[in-house]
Amino acid sequence: MATESPLTFYDDALPGIDTSALCGKLVVIEGPDGVGRSTQIPLLKTWLEHSGHAVLDTGMARSALVGKTIKQVKMGNTLGPLTQTLFYATDIADRLENEIIPALRAGFIVLTDRYIYSSMARAIARGSDPAWIRGVFGFALRPHAIYYLRASVQDLLPRVVYARGGFDYWESGMDVRLGKDLFESFVRYQTKVMRALDGMVQRYGFEVIDASRSPDEVFRDLQKRIAKLLKVGRKARKRAARKAAPKPPPPEEEDAEASEEEDVLVAAQA
Amino acid sequence: MSVFPNRQFPGKLIIVEGIDGSGKSTQLALLSHWLRSRGFGVVFSEWNSSPLVKETTKRAKKKDMFTPTTFSLLHATDFADRIERQILPPLRAGSIVCADRYAFTAFARDTARGVSRRWVRNLYRLAVKPTLAFYFRVPLDVALGRILGGREALKYYEAGMDLRLSRDVEESFRLFQGRIIDEYEAMIEEFDFQVIDATVSIEEQQTLIRGIVEKHMDLSRSSGLLKSPWRDFTDGNGIAPHVL
Image (cartoon, rainbow over all chains, first blue to last red; front, side, top):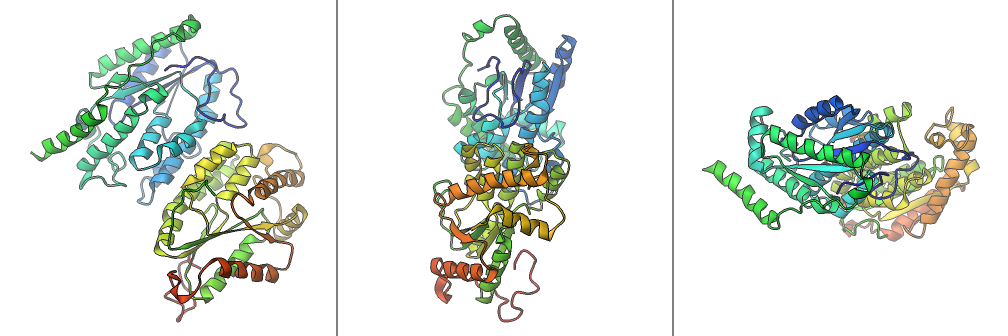
C-alpha cells in the first residue's frame, strides 16, 4: 500500500538522522534476478526527468561504505549466508542515511532497484528466521510505492541465459547448493526467493506487476501507476487514504509455485 | 538469557567483556595458556577481526563514515562472519572457543550511541550463548591511565567523538565510556556475567578466573572436549596464529 508523507520507519527510527521535511517520493522496484528491473529503471528515470522531476536512482551494493567490499567478498568462496545478509543490511542503511534521505529532503523521486525485500527474501531462501530478518531491517523507511515485478522462473530463464551469458553463482544460490548444477540450483533457489517475496505482498503492500509481458507493456503499466502516485502527492492527499488496497496474490500461489519449479526441472530433463 | 536461541554444543565458549583498558585481553591470553597446558586446543576469536570485514571497518573509521546504525551493522557483519566460520564449527567439534569481546560489546556501545536496545539485541540473535561470560569492572580513571600509559592518544570512536559529547577527547572518553559502563552494569544479571574486579593484581584476577572455569566446566579427560594433538610435541607452538 502506498503511504503518504510524512514517511515513517518500519520499526525504531534511525538514530541521529534528521527525517523531517522529506518531501520527495521513495519508489521501489522489486523482483527476482533477471525479471527486468534494470531495463525499466533507466526508462522510468528518463521519462520522469523529461516530465521535470529530479530523480535519484540507486540499487544494491552501491553504498560508499560497503559497495566495493560486497563485490569483493562475492569473488571468494567464504561468504556465509548470515554475513551476506548483514553486509546488504549495512549497504542499505548507508544508502538510506547518505543518499536516499538527503535526496528525499531535496524533493527528489528516489527510484531504487530493490530495497530491503530482496535481501530479506534471499535470507529466508537461505534458511534465516523471517522474524529475525524483519527485525534487522526494521530501520528502513516505508516507501511510497513498492512495485513487485513478478514472473515465473521459466520466464527468467531466457533472460538469464541469453542476456547475461549464463547463470551467476550467487543468483543460483550455489553457496547453499540446492541442485546438482547451476541450472538446477538456480531454479530451486529463485523459486524459494519468489515464494518469500510473494509472502511479503500483503504485509508490505507490494503492487504486483505482471513482468511476463513485453518490456513495453511493463513500462506503460509502471508509468501509469507512478503518474497516479505523483498526482496523488500533488492534488489529492486525502483521497489517497481511500485508495484501493493492492490485489492479494492468487490463493494457491505456493502449490502453483512448487509444481512450477518441478515442471521446469522435468522439462529440462526430457 | 533469552536473547540467544537455545542451542547445545559439545564445545565451550568463554568470553570476556569490559571497557578499553580493563585488562580483559591480558586475562584471556593467560587463561588460554592455562587451558592449553591442560591439553586443550583453544580457538581464539577477536572483536573486529573478520578477514572479509575488518579492512572496511578500518577505512570507515579513518574517514569518519559511520553513523550509529552503520557502525552497529558493520560490526555485526564482522561478528556474523566469525560466528559462521570461526566460532560455530569449532564449538560443534567440541573445542574451547575464547572470544575477546562478544555481542555484549555491541549491546553496550551501540546503545550508548543511541541505537535501539531492542533492535541491537534482535540483530545478535545469531550469536551463541556463552558458557562463561567474564565482565571486568574497572573505574574510568584506571582504564584511562592504562590506555594512555600504553599508547599516544585515545582513538576517535573509542572516545565516542562521533557523538559530539564534548570537543575535548578525554572528556568525551569519560562521558562515552561512562555510558558504556552503565550499560554493562545493567546487563550483569540478565546475562549471568561473572564480575571480576579489574583493579586487583593480574595474578589474583587470573587465579579467580581459573577457579571459576574449573567450577563451571568439566576439564577432565572424559569431558568430551577436543584435545590438542600438539600437546606432547610442541606445547602449542607453531600452530596457525588464530589457534593459541
